[in-house]
Image (cartoon, rainbow, N blue to C red; front, side, top):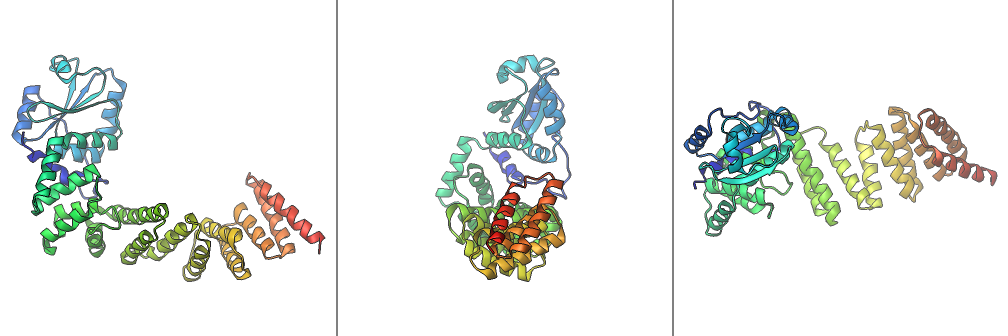
Length: 398
């Protein structure tokens, strides 16, 4: 069996439907089973068959909701000869036994000679359907062959492009060494070819990827090709993943790598993103001194316009600050939050901070404002009632 058709999967390992590519769903071949086989052998492609019945509800849902999806269409049109066959009409009854169809829909993947290589049943969301198709493309024989060639020292650009797909498919390794080997095998002049841009964009999904700096250095070109939102989402996504990894592993190196990416990120929101991921890391890691120092600098040097974020930041100070100076910084944050949008939570936070600052008269007045807002906004204001009681007890002792 030939494997030339597997190479096509390289450009289709995509998370996004690229902005400049034609958006279309699966294109189904119309003809007899013999004609489908002939076409598959002519193009040296495997076959995808939607084995359905006209009365089947999930079959109709698959046809109306999933098959028209552009991402699904791009993948299946590149990699398969696609066919829809009613198992109760025409070639259907004789193929039903051949395919072992016992429920609808049955999704059958066959090699160009008509041998079944994978089969699944039922309704599939787009990502699930593509995952099933990838499993059909990468047969054990093919995977073993690729690993063997790599072990023997095969490092041609053509081979490494295919091998990177295998590495990504199996997820047994993150593939950074293989990515670097691919870069070593090509010239910088070819970085912005169509096939390389697709490869870099799909596989630069980690801040440690050697492909990511290429995207950042050629950001405008990638934006032009894939669309501003897709590129920004991809880059910011790698930063967020690195931050989560830093928290999970308790290794701040991952946070530093995320920050380094943002220093190269050519968007005006980069400094705000940097501040937010640092604060999130310190909050989840319960590094409160680092949190408050970073938050103070962040607030001082950036024009923050998110009322809720400012309130949440001030609340952390209320819970963990030991110094008057820190509490005064938190008061400035919550005052800015209220100036942007007045609501129950930020007035309750302000009252709590004033209480910590021992400004009991001001705290009581603010807590009463919070209480009225809580009632008007249908909030649970029990904590405010407790705060008012505590403030009143303090005032009685004066």
